[in-house]
Length: 118
Image 1 (cartoon, rainbow, N blue to C red):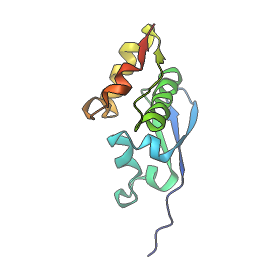
Image 2: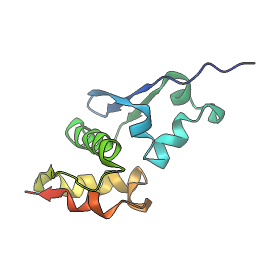
Image 3: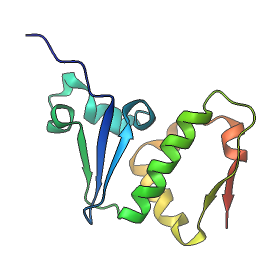
């Protein structure tokens, strides 16, 4: 049985129904999403290229998606611009990062310098 090549994009859905179309390679920074989308996993998410995060609001998932693209764009760069993070989302973003396994990855120091909490 031949498997079709995976889609270049995936859809991430928040608990309140907001949908975000994300470059697959950018979303794969999360080991959780990577596992969900692994074609060998036989998860429905892998088949549909769609992951639903019931416990995550659209506002938080929007910032997570922004970070995925930020990480993907600047992953090999030394000169990284600031990424603004609203103070009121910090706690929820930490919880989302923990859930998505982003707290366990090695983040280049140049990307951490670019985070700007306001």
